[in-house]
Image 1 (cartoon, rainbow, N blue to C red):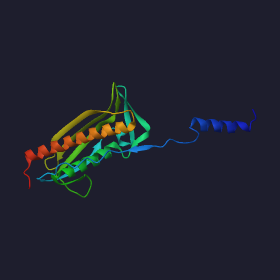
Image 2 (cartoon, rainbow, N blue to C red; image 1 turned 90 degrees about the vertical axis):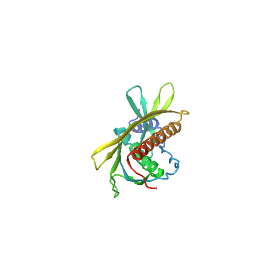
Image 3 (spheres, rainbow, N blue to C red; image 1 turned 120 degrees about the vertical axis):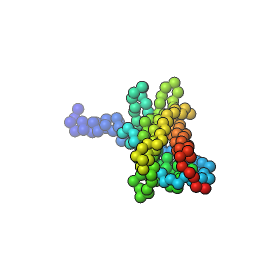
Image 4 (cartoon, rainbow, N blue to C red; image 1 turned 90 degrees about the horizontal axis):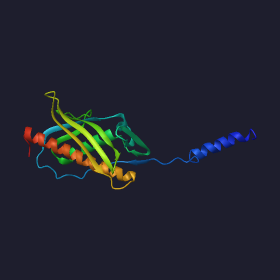
Length: 203
């Protein structure tokens, strides 16, 4: 083979192996805004602060995750969340709590807002699970920290699987979306019950 043709052939092979130089587009997904609940007729005299959500490093990045066997987790190369799941969940929780109308204010911790109570959370699972059927698994933990007393006064754990209706990644996202919405509504209801039992309300 002529020496001058070797670099050309090598380059052509590299282009073929890489898909002829064309990269596959990355698709981004997010969750839907939760529907507004029936607005509360009572407002607790409370300003809630929502801290950053903790979680494994994989949920602090944007690729959509899937479970491999009992212990492994992989990620889709071309399917990503529009923002890391830990940030997405914090934003959704703030929106859900504000929409209830139960509180004087709800804001992220570290903002200029002040509050006695801080909601802290940790995301444990937020991924596709393949078994007999495909499902979207969401597991998370929350607690309510009273800055005044220095104690945790309420806590809640959530772990549920939502069946995936289809095999496309968009169906997985929809299942995770529905599952997350259900879990955050549980958190909002639990907080409402705590303050209802421990605080007077203002009409």
